Image (cartoon, rainbow, N blue to C red; front, side, top):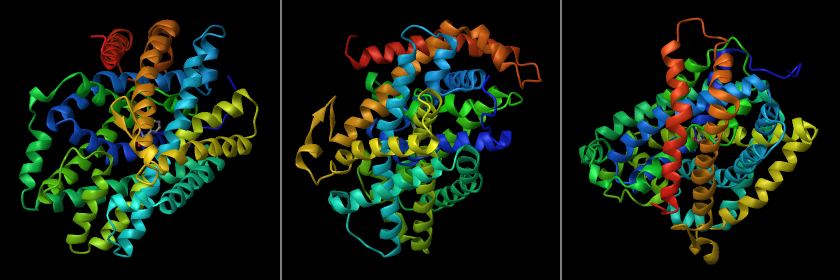
Length: 444
Ligand code: PHE
């Protein structure tokens, strides 16, 4: 294996970094509005099933492949099968990473903008804020540059240090907001929508949305966890680490919903309003609650940082690839890929009202360039990537070989979990994902 590859400082540092990648806008921005669009509680239930039956097994698989090969996704696949088409799966990951980074940074830019909006009690509504091209491009560039600087710093000093203090803080502030939101009038209607399932609302699209959200939120299907896995040492227990990461990620998403839905119903707003949801609901809470300015600013700062610990993993995949495979210097790789994300992100930034063409374009039932990118890369490409990865790891590399790697770092008797993983990754993951994907193309 490659000598001198940088590694996480400690197992705890790795778990924090992987949790940092997982927890981000996916939990606080994307999860609540996707839940709102897909009818509430029944979606939440399916989401949790997707995380347990598909998300955790694929997460374990990605970490294992990364640790075994000590390489970026393209290199990892080449290390298992030097010839053949499988490496395309690795390239797909690099492309998806940069494509997601492009619009992710636009949304993260809104978060930065909202820090200042909250601080200065600026009351322009969300629609007007995002339709302003100067806001859009300015905050987008700020966020993307922050991502670039952290990635330039390298794995340990950059990524790991950031995650250590800030994740627990985000948890605490969300907890406080839940308590506040639950005391609002009509909070119970929101809780009912969010937690009392109506199974008649489940259909193929709900299931795709839930599965896509699970992949997005756990940072799966594009090799981010292969890359992070490549920096883990062999005395780390991958099964328990993956479970901790998935549990924390799901907990934060569920908590975000417990803030948003009570507040949404209290304010009499519409749950199915799409990507603007949290940016409409949260400022309403902050403007009413005592000390809301400080709490609100603090919240948006933490959200921007949570987004940053995710965006660095989106960029890191491509950087690790360009450094390992193309022999770029870390600096050149980072700058080059950031520039691509910058160019690709501009249409997303302008698709929120400024450019009529970009805002109103319609594809795959999604309206606007940013939403189309999110569907194509954030849902479809990740789900498709997860499908191929589960076949690659379960069958091509082989669950048996993977289990030999998983065994390192496991001291207790994990036989039951190991055979469970092997069954899920070889059968349940590919079959279920395949059926969901078929459904997209309405071949059913
Ligand atoms: N998981 C991150 C979030 O929830 C987004 C992400 C997706 C990061 C894919 C890396 C890879 O915000």
